[in-house]
Image (cartoon, rainbow, N blue to C red):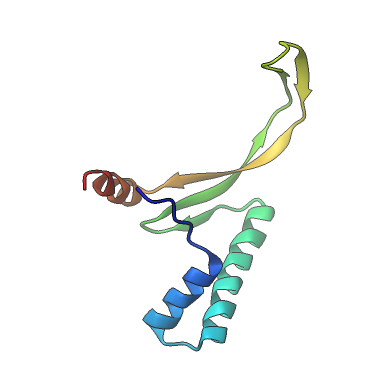
Length: 100
């Protein structure tokens, strides 16, 4: 399987081809959607995209970790992490891609 990364430009190009907006309008639309998603996540809201998945922010408590090289205990600060949970449809599509 090839290592390909889909970029913002790829998304805006897909909008340009599929929807028929100009390239500039397509790029602005993609930027607007991504900014709206980011703002919602920063505010602690979930972003749920039907048939794709759910992005959410999770609070992780402080804990004690261990340096794998030295075995020394290191405190890990509490933090917020972004999580993604794919929908069942997305999981099925990805699994089907593995069979080809």
